[in-house]
Each structure stands twice: as structure tokens, then as C-alpha cells.
Length: 59
Image (cartoon, rainbow, N blue to C red):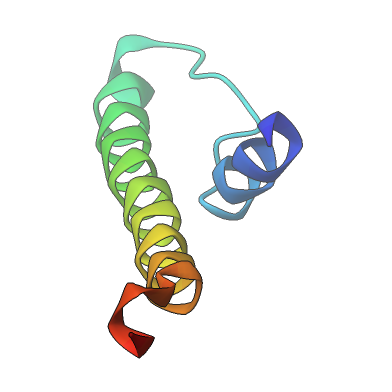
């Protein structure tokens, strides 16, 4: 799972670290957006798996 999160952060352009303070603010904004996107993807996966593995509604 850590590799998957790292790949999401890599897609967001967070492989390199900021070199000065001017690069820090855009980096932090991209980091916050990437965290929210990762959480949204895992939440969507949990809802979908919860829908398919919740067999109580068949009864």
C-alpha cells in the first residue's frame, strides 16, 4: 500500500524536494491536493468493496 501512495505522490510531481522558500509554497499546495486525492481514491475503493462484500441486503 505504501508503494501505491508513493506512486500517487509521484504522479502529483512530488518526487523532488523544494530547494528554496519560493518553491516551498507550491510544493505544499501540491502535497495537500495529493493527500486529498489519495484519500478520495482509497475511500472510493472502500465504498465499492463495501457494496460488493455487504451481503446482508441479499437476505
